[in-house]
Structure formats: structure tokens, C-alpha cells
Length: 173
Image (tube, rainbow, N blue to C red; front, side):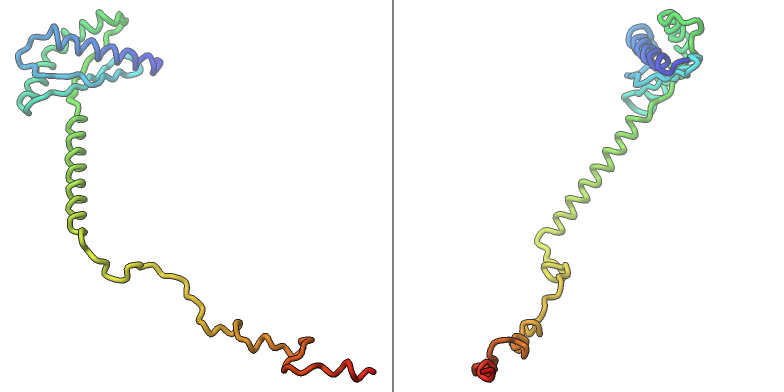
């Protein structure tokens, strides 16, 4: 079967089950249950309905027993409203998503507290070494041989070197 059709039917099944739990199932063991998701196999034979319960572990166990006892009534209503040739079998599974989300929230809070503690311990601290710990390229020394004035006096230079005039022009004539 088509996966898109299975998703649409799964959404419809979750709506039907949520409506049934709200209006038609009157079991006193049924706690404050919320249908979070329904998944349907591609052959449309089996549906898994995920739910959460607000309350203690005892209330969660009572809700699981109430859903197990009401599975037949819920399945017949799902079959009547869907109009399929074969009504899918229903399995109710407690959703662990809220517990996981709560655990993640606790870890984020713990990390936030550790960051705040670290920031408090860093306040007013002084670096152990230099203020700027990064290496810089070495600067050349001031007595660089390329900047020496002696190198400017090239003997092949056309001009006078010691302040005397060049007498070569007078020798020719």
C-alpha cells in the first residue's frame, strides 16, 4: 500500500481514539491520557497508538490496564468510522517522549548551572602567563646589515666618493 495513505489513516485513527477516550470510555482507571501519535503498517493491518498519562506510575499502570480492556470497543469504532475492508488491530504503547524531554531539560539545566558556576569562578581571575599568550613573529634587530650606510658607498658609483672631484675628464684633453 501507499505510505502516504497509511499516514493519513494513522492520523485519523489517532483522532478517533482520542475522541473515544474523551467521550465514550468511562473506565475509572483511565487517567488523564493523551494520544500523541498513531502508526499504521503499510499493509493497514496493525496500528500502534502512542499515549502519555499525566500522573504517577500507579496511574500510568491503571491507564494501561484500562486501555487494554477497552481495545475491542475502540477497535470496532475505528473500523466503523474508517470503513476499511479489514479493521487494523490496535496496540497501545506508553510514549516515552515526555520522559525523554524531561531528562533533556534536566541536563540543560545542569549544564546551565555548571556554566554559571564557572563564570563565577572566573570573575576577577588573572591570566597565568602573559596577557597576550599568542606568539608573534620575531622583529628584525635594529642593526640590520641591509640598512648599513657602508653599503651605500659602492666603488663603481659614478659620483665622487670622498668629496674630491673626478679628474678623469681632464686627462683626455
